[in-house]
Every structure is written in C-alpha cells, then in structure tokens.
Image (cartoon, rainbow, N blue to C red; front, side, top):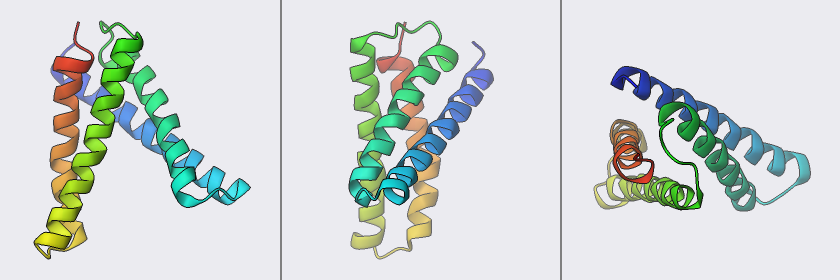
Length: 125
C-alpha cells in the first residue's frame, strides 16, 4: 500500500474508532447511568476492537489478525494512552503550560508514534 493511502486509512479508521468510543461511552453514561470512568473504559474497549478490525483490514491488510497481533495492538493503544497522559501531566503540572498546548503536542506526536509501532512491530507482516 502506498504510504499516503496507508496514512489516510490509518486516520479514517482512527476517526471512526474515536466516534465509537464517544458514542459507547456517552451511551452507557447518559443512557444507563454508568459512572464516567466505567463508561469510558467500555467506550475504549469498543473503540479498540473497531480500530483493530479496521487497521488490520484496511491500513495493514497484510497483517495477520490473530491473538498475538491483538495483544500487540492493545499494547500500542495503551502505550499511546499513557504517552498522551504523560504529555498532559508534564505540560500542565510540571511546566505550567496551558492544556491546549499539550493537546497540540499530543496531536502532532502520538498518532505518529502509534502508526510507526503498528507498522513496524504490532502489525508487521
């Protein structure tokens, strides 16, 4: 797959997974009254499954979608979440910078790191 097409596919699948996360999380919180952290956890899990399916089917179609790949994929997703939180904490708590600046850094680094880890480790051929 051409790099531009692969990067575009990665972005589209990521946006769809993000939408699933939001819909499931809000649905569970607003619809049946689950606590925000619980609802968000289930939203994250739903998004993880959608993202794994989409990334293995469209972005990295040569990848084998097996349990090992899923565990690696989940590890990358959780690492991305941890990096996201670390950047927010360092920027806002340690450096006293505004949250929006942390978000700019996150949006310009975490997707790149995630893509590279998926391409060259978690979902490599």
